[in-house]
Length: 110
Length: 114
Image 1 (cartoon, rainbow over the protein chains, first blue to last red):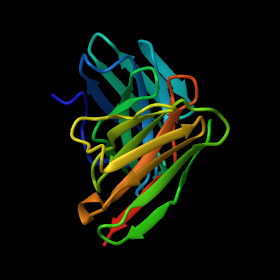
Image 2: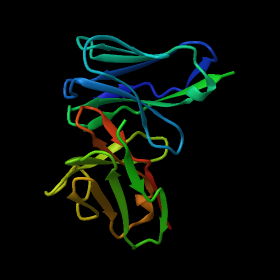
Image 3: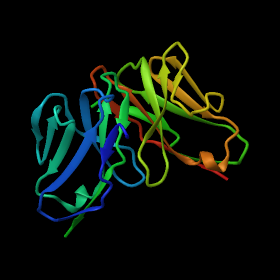
C-alpha cells in the first residue's frame, strides 16, 4: 500500500461549482498534512496545511482531516478556470520531509 | 511565506557530463533541505535529505555516488548529477522547512540530457 493515495482524475468541474478532492494515508505517515497546487511545468505551491482533526478554511479552500479514518480532503468552492491544475496531497514528518500522493488533476470547464 | 530559490531553472547537457543545481533559502536558514525528482505525469519522489555540515541521507534506490549533495552553509544546498544519461532527464525540485512543519519549494530545474 502506498503511504499517501489519491485518485489521479481528471476531475472535471463546471466553473462556479465545488471541487472535492480526497486523500488517504497509511499509519507510517505522520500527522501533518498539506495540499499543494502544481501547474504544468511548475513547482508545487502550498495552498493549505492541516494538523488536527476537523475543518480548516482559507478563502475558497477548505481542508478536512479525519485521523480515525486516515483521510484528508480539500474542497474548492466557486471553482475558477485558474484552479485547473494538479493537486498534490502530502503527509509530513514534522520537519519538512514530505511524502506525496500521485496528485489529482482538476479541470474547471467554463 | 519563506522564499527558496533554485538555479538554473532549466539545463541541457550532453550524456556523460555532470550538472550542478543550486538551492538557496533567501530569507531564512535551513539546516535541512530536501531534493525531489518528478518524471512527467508522476508525483514528486523524495531523493535525499540534505543536512548542513554532514552527509546527506538518501532514499532507497537513489544512487548516492551519482547524485552528489553538498550542504555547505545554512542557506545553500547543491545537487550534482554526475555522468548524466538520458534517463536522468527529469524535473528536480528542492524544498526547505522554514522552522515550522511547512516546506517551501524552489522553482524547480528541468534537466534534459541529450
